[in-house]
Length: 306
Ligand SMILES: [Zn+2]
Image 1 (cartoon, helix red, strand yellow):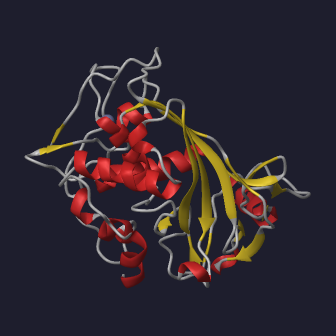
Image 2 (spheres, helix red, strand yellow; image 1 turned 60 degrees about the vertical axis):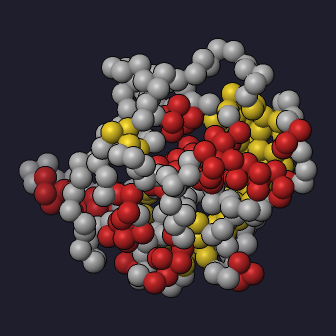
């Protein structure tokens, strides 16, 4: 599949004909009032491991490992904390939005607008129950196209999404803060005794997304990637770990992005109005610029039916 690429725009100057500024964003874990009650787990990838007295037998490694394993207590997989508050790292938010944009693009006239940053060789569609089958069913329309990731170190041209979000050797134009939550987390037990820290339904994480030198339709595309359509509150989208597990006592990973405020360094007359109106206009511009190239996939509804 041919990917549309161009030379990335100059990062060293602030272009006053483009948009720079920041967006204040809330990520809300969906609750009953959103029509689906969910929990969220975004792990730090760290486990606290406690080792107690172990008698070591040097002559038998297998036995030694098994003894150690027995003594290890796996503690709760927990949120990253900033000032002791549960936090979603900015890199996780970026990854969530970027991959939704990548997966939403389909080719037009034999060319596609963006690569997959983590391209993997095309594989057959996984059978029901195989690893990744739910993800594949949700995004099968765009996953059927082979898309190699851009390589800025070899080629001076990159795709639209690499220009916006960056790739090896190229800084992006959009930057993500950590998203901080101010609520009490809960500990839940999964089958097989795994213990995880979760954000309960209705929890909110607040953060900022900063951008420089974007075209209006590119800012609109960023909002599209958050699941926003025609108002400042987005549709439910999937985020974090366990979102595809259906053997758990709760729903996991259903959130909404909510735009609290869009602040532009230099405002444009056509983008004045309430936040709802700003979102609507930016989305219109994106859908017009990328007409026929963006899928409007309702991940949460499709997942519910699988
Ligand atoms: Zn790319």
